[in-house]
View 1: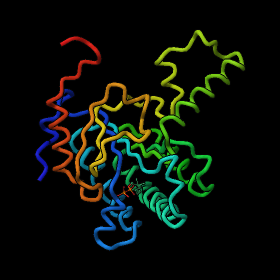
View 2: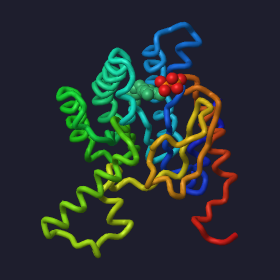
View 3: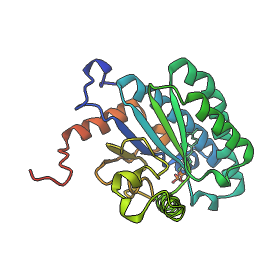
View 4: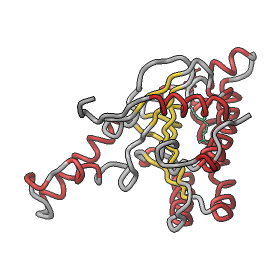
Amino acid sequence: MARISKSKNNAAEIPQHIAIIMDGNGRWATRRALPRNAGHAAGSETFRRIATYCRSIGVKYLTVFAFSTENWKRSAEEVQGIMQLFDKYLHEAIEEMARDQIRLRVLGDLTRISPELRALIEQTDEISQEYEGFQANICINYGGRDEIVHAARAFARDCADGRRTPEDLTEAMFSGYLYTEGIPDPDLIIRPSGEIRISNFLLWQSAYSEYYFTDVLWPDFDEAELDRAIESYHRRERRYGGAQ
Ligand code: FPP
């Protein structure tokens, strides 16, 4: 049973932006003698559930790592299964977004994504552009280093075209070249499944984020686990490099 409620919500208590590395789907499936894609399907349901919960307690942004620039190394069957889950989710989300005023963005290098899925991503992006409630960001073909290189290239292009000079560049301006443009940095980053590393996720944006690691596998992650993560976040003192 969830303990953190919206009535208790205030800016100090609820992180504005939570990011999650959705890890452990494969192990969850293997432990049940199921194909790996059954784990991803279960993980997709967990994402829905946690997004609904985040919205209900007043989190403003939820960003999830769904497919990395390295995940193409997996079998064609697994990659195709994950892409089908994205397709299914986005189709279903169209109705939900309008009903609940949810902004949905897909972040990453979409050039390698099939034209059909890319068209669907563009459609959901366009439909939800004006919705100002909760925002879900799904990272697909995303890599933190890739994102920084992509941003540096875009800035260099603007310099070459005469729109900017190297001296113009500030941290805030550089942030505007990232896929996460306009999205505040994550307050809390959660990684389930017992791995204690960041795996190329939001490298620039996580400079001052708090981390929460848990052994729970992503398909088993639930509202109570999110409450534990938020409670742990409450106990941290965020100093952003300042003195105690
Ligand atoms: C990592 O677990 C998970 C992935 C690479 C895929 C995540 C995809 C989904 C949850 C499905 C679709 C999502 C949405 C938002 C609709 P892993 O396979 O590396 O797990 P393992 O480490 O146990 O093998």
